[in-house]
Amino acid sequence: MGCTGCGNSGGLPKGCKNNGQCGTSGCGKLHVFDWLSGLEQPTEDLKFPYVEVRFKNERKEFFHNKNNIPLQIGDVVAVETNPGHDIGIVTLKGELARIQMRIKKINKPERLAQIYRVANQRDIDIWQENRQKESQMMLDARRIARETGLDMKISDVEYQGDGGKATFYYTSEDRVDFRQLIRDFASAFKCRIEMRQIGYRQEAAKLGGIGSCGRELCCSTWLTDFRSVSTNAARYQQLSINPQKIAGQCGKLKCCLNYELDSYLDALKDFPKSETLIESERGKASIVKIDVFKKEIWLSYIKSDNVTWYKFDCDEVNQFVSRNKKGEKIEPLEDLHKDKNAGETIFKDIIQENSLNRFETKKKKRNQKRKNKSFPKKGKQINSKKTEK
Image (cartoon, rainbow, N blue to C red; front, side, top):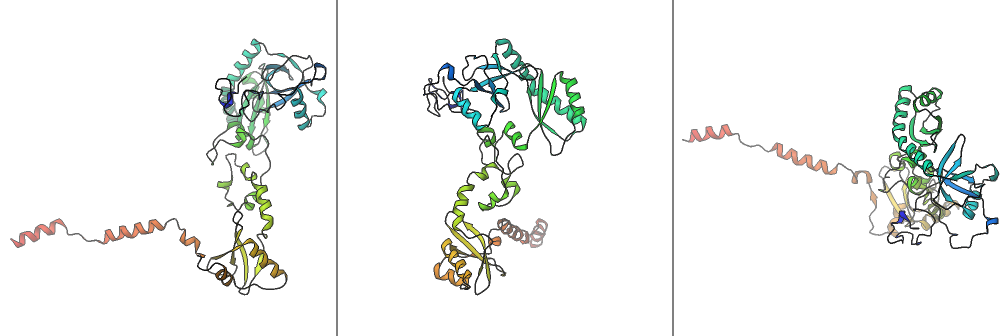
């Protein structure tokens, strides 16, 4: 079996180099690597009778193989639902399913629904036919919801395998009373209706897109768990608290703010706290900027008109703090900076130097010079020639 997601060439995948033994048909975020493929499986009596089945919209559930149907990963099966049956694809079985159920904390597997059979051709045809109706069904559902006047957005529709039920996924900031909407949907689509509210991050994962980094969204490609992200993650990494820059397409804070947060927290243990004040002979100074990678800190006086930053190493600032704790005041920052960094440029008036319209002012002066230039008119030149004659 080759791996379609890695670019199968001659039966060998180009990506994961596992020679098609990963047990999946691709390398998507819903697939689990079969690291037990090379081990000897238990006997028939000791085999785990539960399997994992994947449906649409990144939904996975576990089912009981009560009838001991011989199943392989990738088989299309008909499973028990209420009401009717649904069609899904087997993604895990055996010991991997046991471990996954333990991770998901499923303590009572005897209450799980069972697998009816391997899907026949008629089941697959009905399933594919219902899947093709979903796009038009979602457009009609949005139109009906708009006519009803409800403040909600329908993101996706999932048809059950036998066509007996349709699940509508929607997002809304407030609570929605959709009792009348369900009646309208039932009369329009002639099936059982289920409304399921999802968050904005789940909506972005379903719809997908391109992030500000130029890559596909993490939530739609590989990220499976949504951890809470706070503005403190941006502050620890010395990022600007600008909602337009640190927010993703879902309108929430970007999940990637948590990726390097632990590394920054470990590095910031050597730095003094950002609210630390340093007593000097000239006055109090505060920390205005921190460079975690170079371990440098910029200090500036609190009561000072000119915006001047003085750069010091992290160890030096820690010495300043320890001296203040002993009751000593350090020398003025400019004297300490001159002794350490003789001849080095000090940052001054940063806002004026980095002005974005500095090129436009030069252009305006040039245009004003052109306007002030006086040129003789044609009529006066002709009159002067006539008078000379």
